[in-house]
Length: 200
Image 1 (cartoon, rainbow, N blue to C red):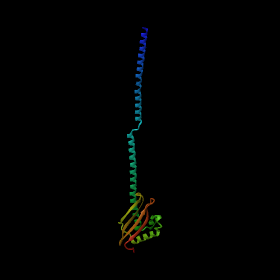
Image 2: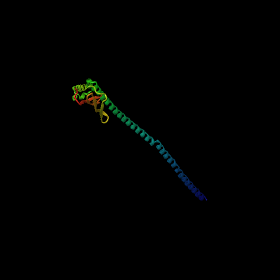
Image 3: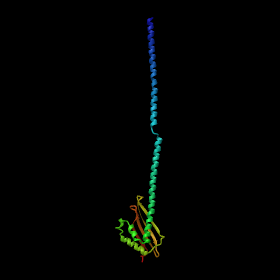
């Protein structure tokens, strides 16, 4: 009997030990869901730290609009300068004609001729030009002015040649003027007069 009871106790211990091992084995997998939750939360945190792509696209669009606005403003400014230069050049030509053909002011012509043109256009030519205009008399103020102003590289160093047909009591004469603005000041670089008959 004693041996039979000992056998039962040993079997019971073996059974209890087996169940305890099974219970321990079943409890260990419960840790894996916690690890999976932690990894997913880390991925979520990483995704939230990334800057939104829509914000980057918006910033790029704003920058592009600013660049286009700056370029458009610069072009508008240069085109306005070109237009103003054409108007200023024509006004200067009319001023030269007024002072030379109508007022016969040789001093004005002396100060208006470009200094770098004095070798080709000496002051004696100024005097001769005004002399012939004086001999022709005073023309009609309704004269026709033609010509064109050109630019270097479309915007820089404006220069041009103009002709004015002047009507005198007994004939017509054509005054030719070449002007330039090398350093912000309009100057005469060449001039001349042609007429139908030599003035008496």
